[in-house]
Length: 139
Length: 73
Image (cartoon, rainbow over all chains, first blue to last red; front, side):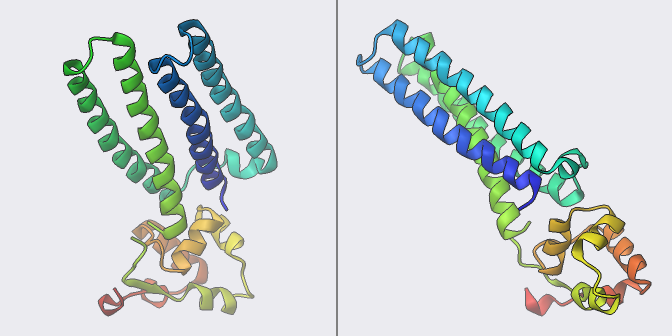
């Protein structure tokens, strides 16, 4: 498995786990199961954990294969990145438009903010997932 | 996705050139080993430039390395 495929796996799994927990926490806040302050602390901690995990795992990966990590992307890797970003952009657009629609359901800026974040997270997940798919199945 | 109408003889040509490894070929044409593997397996059609580089490494014309067969699609 190439360095960039491993990198895509790291991003996919990290986003899935950490933001899965994040939005579960958001659902608990909305449901009134967690207090506002405690929920905020958990949310910030999870975002911090996400950044830390991404950095630590990518540094570990770079140390395992430093030559591959420093090599520029070749044409296949660039094509995969472009195609995955294109798909993710469509997802982000749909999420953003749905966010606009949310204005008719809620006036809460916090809920709308979470919705926008959800769109960004899903787009990131789709980007990594599509990259993995192209790396596995061919492009 | 991944179905490629361009077939290639890279595996055979590597064998004929002293069992050249995918990594050695990849280093000479400026791509990753995984990309050479994907080209060999027909999972990726390389750019014209990379195709010419591969042919140059083996010292053969381009049509000795790649050929188009729409029936295989």
